[in-house]
Each structure stands twice: as C-alpha cells, then as structure tokens.
Image (cartoon, rainbow, N blue to C red; front, side, top):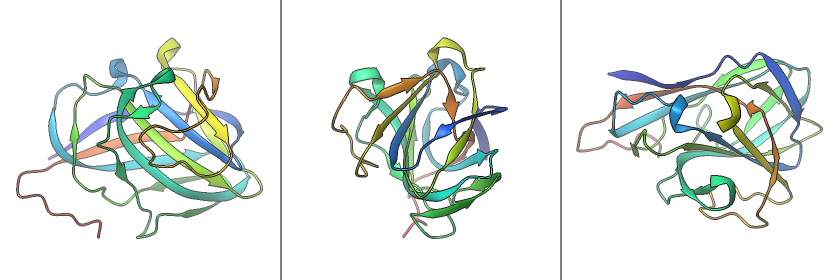
Length: 181
C-alpha cells in the first residue's frame, strides 16, 4: 500500500543553493496522519529554472529538535537517485528518488529533508503555501548531509518551502527488505 505523506504545489522559484547545505522542515500540520509505522519513502523534488548543479546527497527523517528543529532524531535515511547518492541537475526538472531504506514514520513529528548542493547554481521550486510553519534553513560550506546535529547553528532562514514536491510512503511489514544496498 502506498500513502502520500506530503504534497506541495511548488509554484514559485527560490534562490540559488550552490555550495549550500539545506534543511527543509515539513510541519506536522502538512503531513498525512492516516498512517504511523515502518515504511519506505520515495521523494519527488523539482526545480523551475534553467540553473545547473549537483545534489551531493540527501536524507529524510524526523526532527529531533535543536535550533529551528533542523536536527534529526537519529532515524534519518539516505536517498539515492538511479542508484547514486548524487544527482546532476540541469534546467527545470522533476526528479524521483529510489525507494529509501525502511524507516519509522510518525506524523506527530515534523519531517526534515536534508540536502547539499554544488555547481554553478541550483535554484529550487518553492512555495509559501504551507504558511508560517514552513521553515527552510541553509548553511554555506562543506557537506553536513545526514549529520544528526549539524554544526554552525542557527542556519540562515527564509519563508519558503523548497525542493520537496511529494513524499510517498510504501507500507512495510517485517521482516524488512533493504533494497537500498
């Protein structure tokens, strides 16, 4: 069974992320609360510009608090794109991740989308439709992708929700099969 855990129209364009770590907090109020449990995630991201760059890595997990809620709770999972942890980006595009390793989805805790970008410029699709609870944080510098408690907090903030268009969850039953490798 597949459940849409998060969906955002992403009708605007946000600023460049070249050389940045970016963490987007997906608030509880915007998560599907019809399911709690073990699952695999498939994440769809998109851009609406002609910029180019590279996604060096991405993780998905629940917020563990910290400044602005950007820390993971320790249960974050890595994402791959066609079997690779990195993804070349050129122009307006929609990209769909491979199925993640199994993780425990709890809709009472905000989700955190974590990424690091390099290249000339990478500009996200964005929206302000999630309201005041939308939080997008960034920090220039070396990759901190997947780190439970990233350094140099507080990070820069803006009022946009960026990159994540949709998160689909595939309900898992024990024993879990790790297709990630």
